[in-house]
Length: 290
Image 1: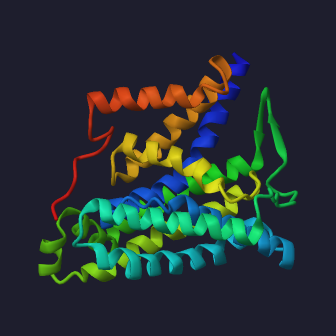
Image 2 (image 1 turned 180 degrees about the horizontal axis):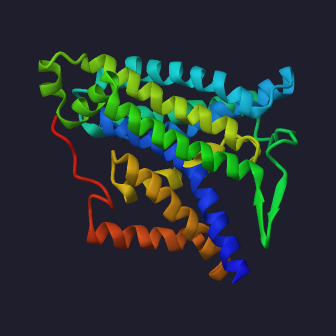
Image 3 (image 1 turned 60 degrees about the horizontal axis):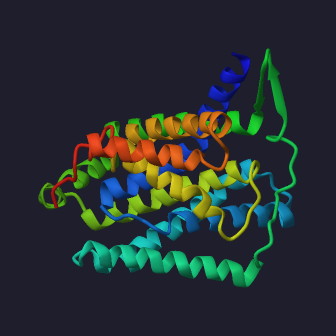
C-alpha cells in the first residue's frame, strides 16, 4: 500500500511539471489558434539561459526563472509578431510549418553553440528529499507542483477578472466579433503568445533544478505536453491542468506496474481511447469561430 501511495504522490508531483508547460501551450492555441511546435525549443532556450546564469553569476534557478520568463515573453511576442502574424490568413499547415522551422533553427543553433553535452545545474536547494511518514518526496517537485497550482489559479482569475483576460476570451471565441467590440486582436495575439512563452520560461527555472540541460530537452517534455493539451481539450485551461495530473499518474503507475519502457505506450493508448469517445478532449468545446 505504501508503494502505491508513493507512486500516486510521484505521479501528481510529476503532473505539476507537465502542467506549467501545458498551460502555456494551451493558452497560445486557445487564443491565437496556432499549434506552436517551437514550444519545446523555447523551453530548451530557457533552461540554457538558467544554466548560464547559474554558471556565470551563481544565480539559483528559482531566482533566474523571473528574468528568463521575461526574456521568453519578449521572444514569444516577437515570434508571434514577425513569424506567425504575417501568416494568420494562410492555411493552418503553413503556420505549423513556420513553427516547425523555428523549432529546427533553435535546436540546431543550440547544437552549434553548446554541442550535445549534458549540463546539470549544480544546486542544493530544491534537490533535497523530505521523509513524510512512509512517503519520500523531492522538495523541487513539491515546489513545482505548488507553483503550477498557483499559476493555473492566477491565470483563471486573470482571464475572468481583468480587461486583458476578457479580451483573450473574446478573441478565442470569435476574433472578428471581438474586433468589432474594440478589442485590438493583433495586440491580444502578441500578448497571449508572450504569456504562453513566459510560462515556459518559468518552467525552465523550476525544471533546471531537477533535470540537466541538453539541446533536445524540450522535445522530451513537449511531446507529453501536446498529448496533455489534446487530451484535456485544446484551449481548455482546466483540461491542461487535469490532463497533466492524469498523465503524471499514468506515467508513475505504468512505469512501476507495467514497464518503464512502456509507460508512454500506456498513456498514448488511453489518449487514443478518450479521443475516440470524445474527440474534443475531456473539457474541450470545439474550435471557436474565426
